[in-house]
Image (cartoon, rainbow, N blue to C red):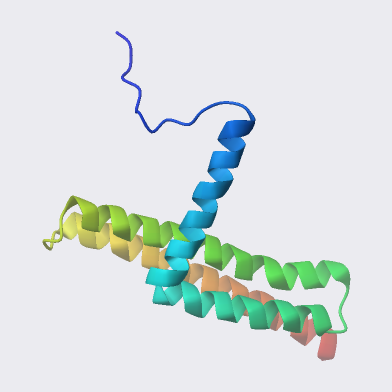
Length: 128
């Protein structure tokens, strides 16, 4: 039996890459417009990236400082996607919906802890 194919399934070749790029920009714009946490984390990323680039540390250490900030943005986008899907399914309170949202939130928290720990280790190693 043949699987049904979604009408939204992507094309192939360069058109697919171009479409994916446009969808990604749409996602970033929507996150900026509608997700307060994403805007906060993007500002944290901007300050952190500039600070990391100005610090007297190696290029590798700069990358190590910036990478968890990028990861936090990625996980926040995934968390926002989970929340949107849960809300799309139903706005009524349900234990499974709560779990899905709490799991996404916990993932963002862990990324924040990873970023803080990374910055602490690099800065302590460099300056003490």
